[in-house]
Amino acid sequence: MTLAGWSDARAPNSAGGAAPNFAGVGDAFAEAFADGEEIGACFAATIDGETVVDIRGGWRERQQEQPWTEDTIACVYSTGKAVLALLVAREVSNGRLDYNAPVARYWPEFAASGKDAITLSEIMSHQDGLVAFPEGTRREIYFDWDAACAVLAQMTPLWPPGSANGYHPQTFGFLVGEVLRRVTGKSVGALLGAFHDGQDIDVYCGLSPAEIARVARMQKPPRPPDLGDINEFKKIAFLTPSAIPAGAGREEWMAAEIPASNMHADARSLARVLSPLANRGAWPGGELFIKPDVVDAALAERIRGDDLVLPFHLSWAAGLMRNINRHFGPNENAFGHAGFGGSCVVIDPENRLTAAYVANKMSPHLVGDPRAVRLIDALYAALQN
Image (tube, rainbow, N blue to C red; front, side, top):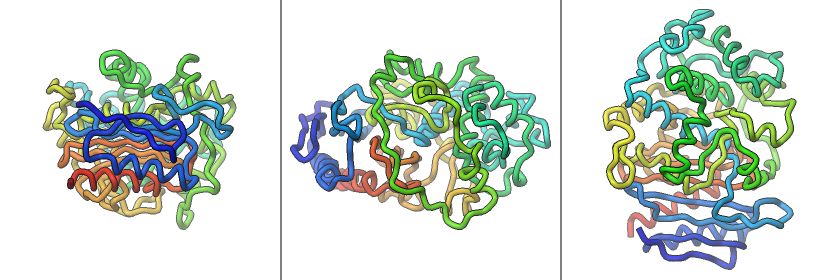
């Protein structure tokens, strides 16, 4: 699809393109810069797998020395969990994984401490009770894949698996990543590498020095997120020293594979890589990446309830939030995932649409960042024209 060139004086270094009828998305994007809400950002959307919006603007850092360009990537934090959902669906489609199978079928050591019956579906929907590493775990463990997985394999669940959902900020990536490694022989970063050439998709988990040179610097949010009333699960997931990585510099952190929280990407690549989930498993042009019945299984509700960690009533599919709270646009039948600081993705099979927002001025919103909501609303308004 041919996009009309786009730029707006309100957004410095603005560039990109939008299909006819989508000019309002560019207006919403520029307004955020005019209001001082952005340093640098990008937004993209696909319909039927074809890009209809791909815009960017601003700066790669607060000092405003390096423009945000077409090859800029940024950390998307937990938005990367949506990419993990895609990778798992692919392996289910290939017959290597089964959502309803016990994880111990693929990872025998995981059966320890009463976890032999926990299914892949329960891990994908945050039901397994392994919400975080045990208190006192050394923070350097995030940089030692085998050690991290060994701790999780021996850990006792913090609640009866399958009885409730409790969001896993960090451990989700190791749990899912190890299952993928056991059946493919490849790490998450290596699996993503298959997209870099054939599909021209810039989504990474573990960066090379050349890729690090393209990364936008993140500005931390002005205040911590609102977790609601603190319970034991929120405390261990977010508020203990072992809840976040430590013991490494910025470049070592970017080079590591911590799939739940340090994927790097641009919006165009996120919207593109997730498009099979909105298009019955197909890439643009019709090549099947995931079988349609597996897409249905990936998007089916696995559990619904008040989350033990996030302050929301949530409905979980296999790695994606179902849009019951309309954090991802006006269609309650859509799906999405958000990341710390504001990034997010939307997957809407009814409209064959995907969208992604990436920025480096972080906000305290856990999900539903107003900047992203404004862009998504403008996108849906354009669909009505």
